[in-house]
Image (cartoon, rainbow, N blue to C red):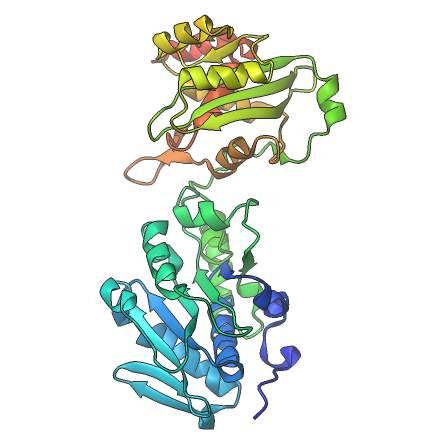
Length: 420
């Protein structure tokens, strides 16, 4: 039988680009708000591929008991929607779907029993498709990678290729590993990410739309998170003055108001040295270069700084390590400690947020770009927003604060400190 599918008839138009580029990527990530059609589309693609190629598929959720009422039913719907029920055998104990002409199969496993995933084998056709639904249910990326590695075990025969599908509603917190991995401009070449929401799905019921409108009236932030699938964090965006763009060599040659900052690190925490240009008149901060690495000794860092001829101006560093500052000086690097005190962190972050523009070139300073893109405000145990940023994966941000401390209004900082 033919397995051709007319996109205009079967697949939601918003996913046509996903359908076309699907074979070109190993990882296909569909994220977004509720009822956007992302799981429906993946189910259709899996049924299509198993009818076209001699491969099997494995469907995984964090908790095995949720498989039947979610992924299994979604795939049954796809089979019916495509009008191919007569070619498929359905088993519920254990859950299994079999395409009768070639005996390709869809298997189901829960990640709450990882040994059943590691030991899974199929005798007739290789498992070449993995679909993990509700990716955000997994606490760490490592948990997911173990499952992926269980599938990507051997070279596939002929022209066959692996496909890894992830689907999820983005978690609220920007620093959740899923958001940091896939809600970013820094995607690996083998990853395709598609975002959708209920407005892309013409089959959404009027009742659902009514609920969405009511949620929007009551709380715009909740609406954006649940219905539009935006990782809104605490509801307030830190650094909405960010501009990620290329900074040309010509621009760099014209800059003459350099700033440099250091945040120390060694074991799990990276050393971060940033070189910046501050346009005081236009209140613009440009990120020009970075030295960034884990387990980098002061001697190695000083060598990198001198190699780039960045020892010509003072690097303002975290004053919590006076021995490191003294050591840097012995290597010929101009360095002094930052003037810290109560409220200085919050004030420095506020000063950066108040700039007219923070311009970051992801090619020149990729780690700084990633940190500024992902950072979020802290929240208390009741979910209320604090005035301080998360103290995690913020080494470039701290180095930036130190670098710019002489540009901050010391009188205003003293006024802030008097409140502590």
